[in-house]
Image (cartoon, rainbow, N blue to C red; front, side, top):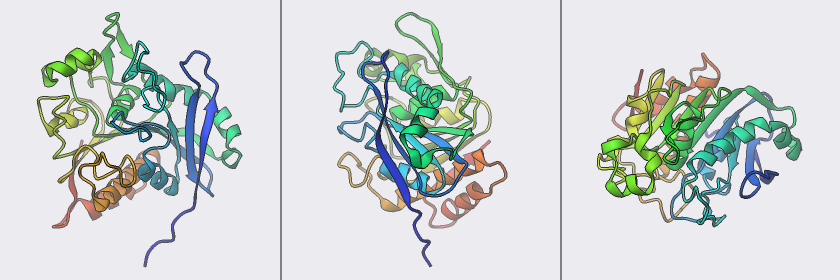
Length: 309
């Protein structure tokens, strides 16, 4: 017997006036219609070739499912979004620093977010905050969880970790720099060259596709996306999805052209496993993660494999 879908409200744009930013910060907020003490999940979009997936209007398969699972999901439109056309900005095209700063701004101004969404007022559990991101959004999430890099402009070590964030989900995130990068990547995106996961001690689920070579960025192939798991300390889990490309079956949007490995069953598995991971991390003792792993990553029909430490 199928479960009755949980109604979800989604409000956008929620605008936070931000005079020190190129444009004001706009958000989408999604949450279940009912329920209190909702953990907060910050969701960082990727870059990609599409216009609106890289904005508050993307990633509906994840945002809606997580909201239906009992989380308040907040999605910013980062300055890297093609919808903003800020290609001549000094930090363009990827805006690696401001992406992380967007998330810190959101947490600093949750009172304003609640006031803009009256249905959410008083329903957030601010002691339970996670960050998630896909592709370039995974890089953003890794910085907020404690990864560091060297600013290619001034040579200073950059620490953008936010202590309010206690766990994360990295989806097809970039791996280490150095000789793992293609020459063009190191030249065009020099901040990638010094990515250091040795300080990323917060718990995280790293999700990677075993058919995601990302040859435009790395010479190492699909295993590059597992670096945040292998090279970071602390409690981590790695979900490797069988047959998955960079879109992980289509997490960035429904029926989008840039998803080369479209697979509804795979997306459903990512939805269920990530929601279960977040629930178990933000509610210690909750068995959701183990149950989801048992159901989806064991037996002859397994959609992937899970490692943990």
